[in-house]
Image (tube, rainbow, N blue to C red):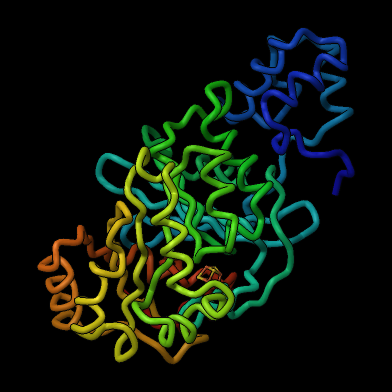
Length: 354
Ligand code: SF4
């Protein structure tokens, strides 16, 4: 592993400063960003419009790559899950989800996760470390190499391994690069950060970057949410929703996407469905219902189709905007809550969920 810092962790403004320190005009940084993020070139030697001396100095001072693809598997539905290896050997997973007219990349922010949600395979792994900003954005650079010709990543969701707001500075730096016109140039409405809710940090995130917010709700009472999302004991539902109600900035953005993993016998009752609209009142909200994906580390599973339809029907009848999100890539353990770095043999043994 090279001891040089990875250049992808440096924001465009900071890169301008750094290159000025090497005696290069500041606009050279925009060219470098164009090669790294726009064209996906990881070899300074191939950045032909930079001049030999600058290329050599970049090579001397920086590594261009933070991650490499260790393995990749494609689901029958076209979803691609890859394991990426960092320079210290740490492994994380990213998932590409092609759909008609869009391709979403789901990226990780931590190696493992300390929050141990009951339905989540990542949580069952425990926590190793935060990813660096370079390791977060390099998932975009490396994963797009796996796309078929003519496809490009249109949306990025911070919903892979880890709780993004526990790694806020790196997540903000990565999101800024996704949005920067000289880097990935994505529209803010195409970038979503998902959280279970960390006290004080939602406000900080939204102040720093104009991304969409997704909140992992999963329950309508503290009693059930305490079981599913243990972090709820430190930041209970009432406090979390009160914070969201008070955030003026949310009124100028797209609605908050509330994620609701539907689990048989736990949070799938008609009463739960009826509690949702009053609970979220005062917050611009959309509910995404995701039938739980089974995995080897949890005895929990999804309800049957009739119960799923009844739940979604009740929510819709209450006037709350609701979408049922069917699972993508469950046969390769790429669906929500299934990212756990399982080798293919073990993964094949895990039942697919919804
Ligand atoms: S659902 Fe998210 S926050 Fe909860 S354990 Fe899994 S990765 Fe962590």
